[in-house]
Image (cartoon, rainbow, N blue to C red; front, side, top):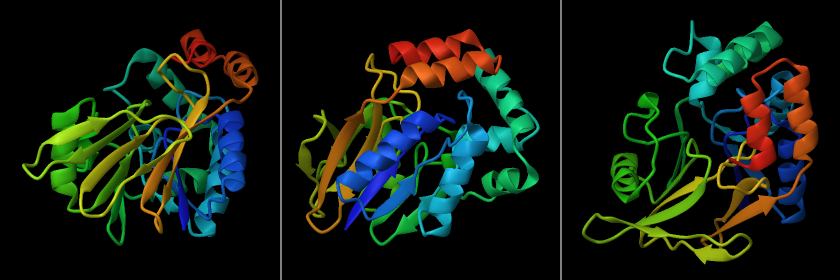
Length: 247
């Protein structure tokens, strides 16, 4: 079974549609959303309707920090652009959409897999996994063979050594990586809607449970349309430029 892993969509409808189409072409049979469905982008309502349809069909769902901020009183820990997008997003959603975000769990577990937006160690703290020690801490807390997360906006893969140290592995887009169950793994799927590695192409990954492989993908999409929508909505210019530069 092939499971598509989507993180950090950030209300970017063009990127989401491109990744969903690509995943279907790759034979993905199920989908998991690893948080931050909204924030930054200009299509929160349309993205949520697309995702809610996937959830109704059985997709795995977890909450991200932007999802939480939209349904909370404020976003005091975020930068000004993020806060502005959160406040704007809250005004674009109806009660059913807000209730959907509010009901998302912090983590989801399926067999030997844990899904979480940030670190599995205190997931509500929204800790970024930038390095091997952070990955090791998350894997240790997860008590799972495979941990799939987002939040960082760049694709990454780690496995745990017998001594409990996380070792990084640099993924190559489109190349299946063996992730056998005799080791413990943490993968960051990258961002569908706001990649930050200098490449404008959207990020996602596919986990093949039968073959125990993980394939990271990059998908070109029309970022110019998504950026134009951000400007038309009156959101911070910085957010449009990030899509144009992939950073």
